[in-house]
Image (cartoon, rainbow, N blue to C red; front, side, top):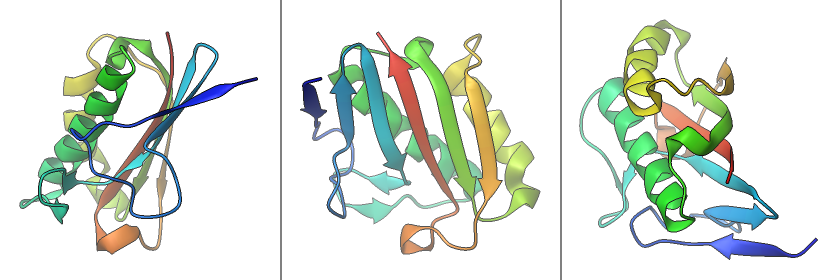
Length: 126
């Protein structure tokens, strides 16, 4: 199956050998997004809620580049540094997804790139 690389300047550029997203058929696989501000490639200032919001803004920009939005997301994975911050991240997550409640995994990890507090990846269909 032929696939298409999705890239937008409205989300952080890849900091390694990967794509922001890959579209295969009607499926879009969005790489994990950390809370970098696209224009500066710096971590957004603020607490875990600010980091979760920036990560989701980055996901949103990539979805938009592919002509999709959060209503098209069917699966997400949330990686967090501290499970004690789960409720705060969930609050922000719910604001972005609204009534769409995709399947999801949330795992605490020992370390994330650049020592951020959260990273979010999604799979969308559209």
